[in-house]
Image (cartoon, rainbow, N blue to C red):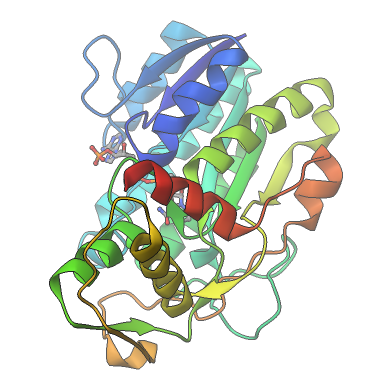
Length: 296
Ligand code: NDP
């Protein structure tokens, strides 16, 4: 199987280079790749890459993920998150290739407390959420066999993320305030990459199972409880990290005004994925502990 991976240096893209390798030959590109265009600001260029390489599977881990910045550059966000994925999906349809794409809990408005199902109506609050939803719609309309994996609160040992920011701040400041009214599940890029490899194998054999899935680690937490978990893990680590923060205080989202509104309820119901693909999604803290052990 020939696999073409876009966005290979991002959190998920990096882990995909490892997990996709067991499925076949992987060509991994990022926006500045020399041999083939992997720049998502150039939809025609990446479409041309697909026509040249003729992969069996295209995996798209590239995106405009700077949620606040997207508010001031909506056109670029639309190109990266919607127009180019749509163009790639059309090429996949022409080739008969499988197209794999990631989307987000930010397609929902965050109301209520029930985990969102795939059949729930999206109502994004931000440019990022709206452009990611447009990407989903263009892919679905393309007629390509596709997997759209909606996930939440992604972290990885490589790259910046919330857990690393909390660790740094806890070593610099005496007091931290962290949002405690947004709910979700921190999801490891490693887990997403492994699930992706299984899901590709599954839908290549059972094409009727292609489509939209929610993928997140099991359980739920708030950013506040997640921060406390990270700091407590670091304090107990063998390499004595000097944590200065003796107080972590919960605050409401309204205490941290940001250009982009965030959903309060980012819980994703993952039953469809687990039942269809025969997979088990482990509890969120198992992956976070593993990542902390790796970076500390
Ligand atoms: P990252 O931001 O880590 O990775 C995105 C990748 O896209 C990076 O390699 C980035 O390169 C690349 N990129 C940026 N601009 C361009 C461009 N013009 N052309 C090609 N590539 C470009 O994101 P994640 O790995 O965390 O996200 C993977 C997917 O998961 C995305 O679809 C995202 O929307 C989705 N997702 C992420 C969540 C999260 O919490 N991070 C939550 C829910 C969904 P560079 O780093 O050099 O800019």
